[in-house]
Image 1 (cartoon, rainbow, N blue to C red):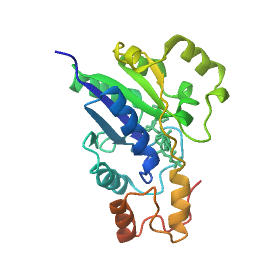
Image 2: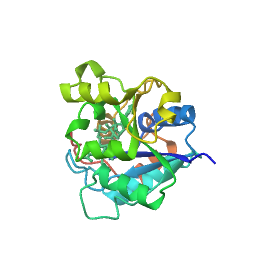
Image 3: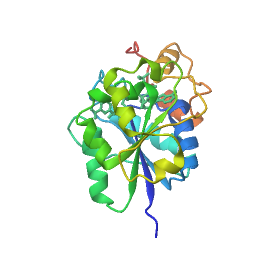
Image 4: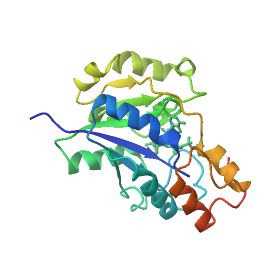
Length: 218
Ligand SMILES: Nc1ncnc2c1ncn2[C@@H]1O[C@H](COP(=O)(O)OP(=O)(O)OP(=O)(O)O)[C@@H](O)[C@H]1O
Ligand SMILES: O=C(O)c1ccc[n+]([C@@H]2O[C@H](COP(=O)([O-])O)[C@@H](O)[C@H]2O)c1
């Protein structure tokens, strides 16, 4: 029997939007992943604290994920009082489900700083890395460490990716989604409670709880 293929997709998700979900759903379907675990982080390692607390961000991720049968939501990072290092989360998932092959999803902007992630080399011993295209983030801007990493680990197509249990990096060619949570926070703060890139239930949740009404963080 072939191993189950599963995705891990972490984010601050402050709030979750279509630019998070649409590319990963498209790529996960192409690879044939049975499920993708959405993991809202508690304490983001390399950025300011989120504008909205973990409980609200988790609730919004659950509402948005409900439209996608492939997506599951985990509160594992949120339930820990520690910085949300992906290497720790992945280690936990690999221990809990040793028979699954894991694919970690990130956007192109995250790849450009991946060499600064905590023990990033260890992530590649446990999982493949799948990178979604994102407007405004270009592989040509990669620093030498990322270029070297790609020279060693990049695979050109999904067949090669699926032959690897871990250690492959795949640059996907998903449809572009031009949106960021920063832009949405600014729109929400300006009083625009609905946005085409926000799930309608998430918009209602934001309005009902009066979220993002204070000055947005950059
Ligand atoms: N529009 C998008 N297209 C592709 N990937 C995206 C997009 N938006 C976010 N991502 C990816 O989703 C992951 C989580 O991102 P995050 O929650 O920080 O969203 P964000 O929109 O970048 O937020 P912020 O504007 O607050 O920085 C990251 O790997 C990021 O690269
Ligand atoms: O492990 C790390 O060092 C690390 C550094 C930066 C980001 N991450 C993870 O990448 C995901 C996206 O992060 P962010 O800051 O773009 O929302 C989120 O799950 C973070 O926990 C992880």
